[in-house]
Length: 358
Image (cartoon, one colour):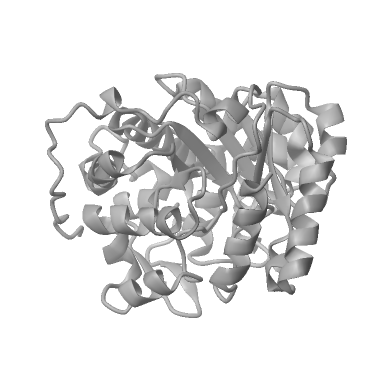
């Protein structure tokens, strides 16, 4: 089912934990609430389709092949570091590698997105999904991290999808607007749906621990579809499993939680004590700081659409956010969601350089 990963030329005998990113890095300091220099900046989807170098590579390989090959993982992860000198790298991968490892059949179609070939629709189907006793189906990620580490001078962020978001793909079979199948199952058979969420959480814990052992210095968990949930359902079917994952990590690595709808759910996310919370653009970060004290970091929250604006407008909006959070030792500059594919590199470079000048 999985292609044989291309071996990385870096020696696998190196103990990569001997060369961690500096504890003085802006990102790690901000995640401790102790950064008194300019804010660190990295951007969700920074290694993606807006980069000409990414599009050129994509002409040679399909998306999943790029996710499976350790040297390609490293190459794509490094692209925004070389292009913009951002303060952190985020591992190039996808949140659906766990459903793929579970044998559900994952493919990506242009202009359609991810497709799950064998969706899960009942608790009987959940019972056939194997436990994470063997992570060999995900070793290409571990090897990709090993390729990356000797090249990086900034922290590497690993990640996974949150159980609710991953479950929604597994149930719907594709991206959904209304999550009808997911919510029907969640509300008509909550016990069965909890079994699915627990299975995904167990895999996520094992997968993140593998990334930690391979050398990532921070983690981000993406709950991209949490905004589709009502408050009570968010606490039961999303927050509880984010908490379970945080408690299941073997080593203390800072974790950032990002949800769509985080401007609504941020106080609840803070209750489970992540190192940081990624916020969308529908809230004021300085006002959110009144409800979420240090040392919890606040990450965000520029509207990605601003990157379509003229460069002086981008500079104005970046400076507005920097002024709003001036002096906050736990502020991490990011977008409120990912970079859109048709944004220009000049726009992204303008954003990053504006922060680096502070």
